[in-house]
Image (cartoon, rainbow, N blue to C red; front, top):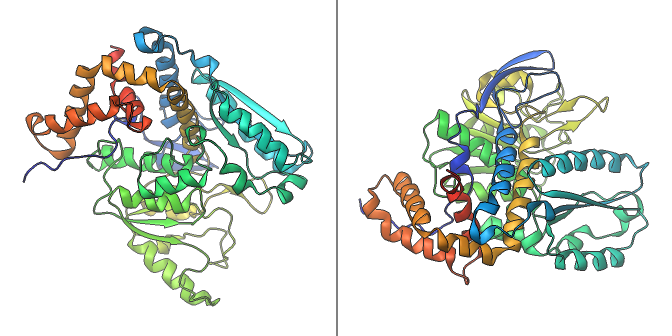
Length: 447
């Protein structure tokens, strides 16, 4: 069969990540007094547990710091100072607001992780009395500030601001090259279309990464040139349809050749009516087909099963299903975390995430990684110069990645690789291609 040219994104950090032997993606560990044997490892650590083997966050964040330190060794990039580039989080609400207290804790985790990567972290906090006009004025300044790599609003806002301010309209004013959390609807649209874009939404992107490394390592799936596993041949169910997780995740998976089922939601199978039996029947039929389940329902509003807090129970799952559960909600006593999948159902899965140490750390890691990429976007002319200066390395790397994916000889793909190298260095192409190329060749440059 003739070689078919590839024109999508190529490069990124995942080719390096998936090759790391110390990254033991599937681990055994205890959690909530139960033993689990096939945990998809987002962080590698949970309170009280030994910090080994290394997980997604434990590998990527130190590597970003290593790369930050190495920038000074690349002539075109030596003037970039990572610790002068900030990841900005904006928190709105009063200190006694419980919503803000939870957000502040999350922001604290992001701050620590950001600093570990070599970047700086910055938080702007405002009372709930701040007006939309005041925030728009500040946003204009942040968009123009070249020392800010990415910026995000921590949602929801608390108090009066949470009721009065249209946060969708506000987020749509975030400059696309700084929209590291994927809150601007243009970013969401580009992501769903598979078009060139600066960033992806952090949670769906992290979920796909967690599944990809399992599929590549344990199932022998091909790794695409963009660093994502091929989902071809798998029926993949998305449960949840939020604008920043379920919907973009569903569209992403189609781009990666999955047979996408869903997304499931409150009206699935009802025909507009509250027919509980029909709903449960449709939910079950779809979930029993799925080879992979990406779940992001969140709290449990559906009351699908009268005898359990969970959406997915054992009878709904196919034997050997892969489960990536993004939900961590606190119900009943407000302390115990719940996902969407009943722990008793995990025995049917080949691998799964837990409520703690799975998708959450992957999301934070993606955010910090996108802050690191944001630093490169702020210096895109220097990045393109570094790619041009390293053209033989880029060409060799691209040729290897294309040949591996296509199962072709390097001679067959070299012309295609040359086109993609030229695109990465071209000042008229989208900056994402130059940044992807630089990330792909960093391991070679650092040898």
